Image (tube, rainbow, N blue to C red):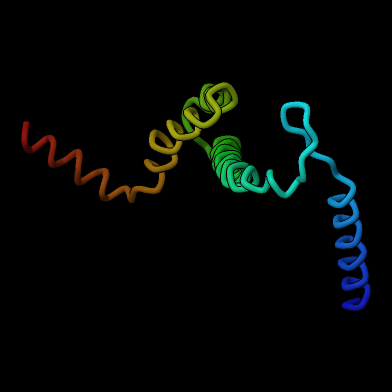
Length: 117
């Protein structure tokens, strides 16, 4: 199995190097070596990682809203679907974080507020 993996990896590497050699890059209509555009990878790669992290966070909040018994479930699902990242952040602070708080902490805060009033 390991040998099969190494053969597949070698084949993939040779295919990608062949594609890179055959690639032509143009800038303002002039063909240039593709090595001159390597700086773009350093811009695209971090943006891709950030986009992936945002998507994972959004999907995590959506799955949480679907699975857990929460108040106003249809409303929160719509907010998550339409609001994307902003909806996921709002859901996290309004619902998920509140669910994590121990009940005693919530009771202590409400009793402290009642004593101060």
